[in-house]
Image (cartoon, rainbow, N blue to C red):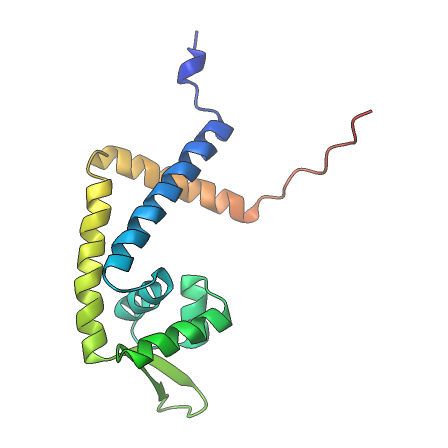
Length: 157
């Protein structure tokens, strides 16, 4: 017979996941802020580091920021000499954002620290548990993407 305290219901799992996510976000934001960046600026620099020059709209899609927020972030980073905007060689209407040499050097150093911070947080999680978490979260994310919420509950009489 299953011990009810060992059963991890979906609502219980959601609560633990939400709390863990909140704590991790808080830790990472403090770490990024200590490097002199806001989280939005970090995300823009990180995507440019890993994907190369991109349009503002593509960056926005990758980091899930609204267009106005993206423009503000790019403006801040450009003012600091970390990125620059340039026209695309094949289509002059397209404006690409790319890292400057200083920007690349800066985000490489900050990203290396970010990786260490994440490894520190995950130090108590075995490789097997990481794999299980990864696969489980991937399944949940894909299911949530296509799921249809239940209908509205009928009014109580």
